[in-house]
Image (tube, rainbow, N blue to C red; front, side, top):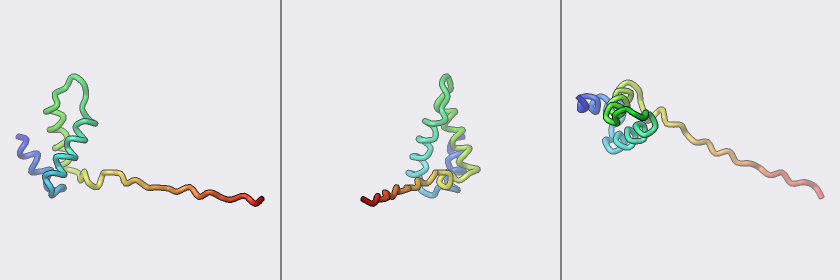
Length: 72
């Protein structure tokens, strides 16, 4: 049942709103054509149960480009 999957996923994500946001993003990325969205959502929740989805989000590193001045 999906409620079991949700409670399993809540072991890694304590906030239900955040879990909903992460699950919807993952479902959109992992969904395959000609399959049910419900099956994809269940697969996402099963993945969240065994791994931490918050730790898997990549961090964006901003590299600044330093301009060098030329001598005249």
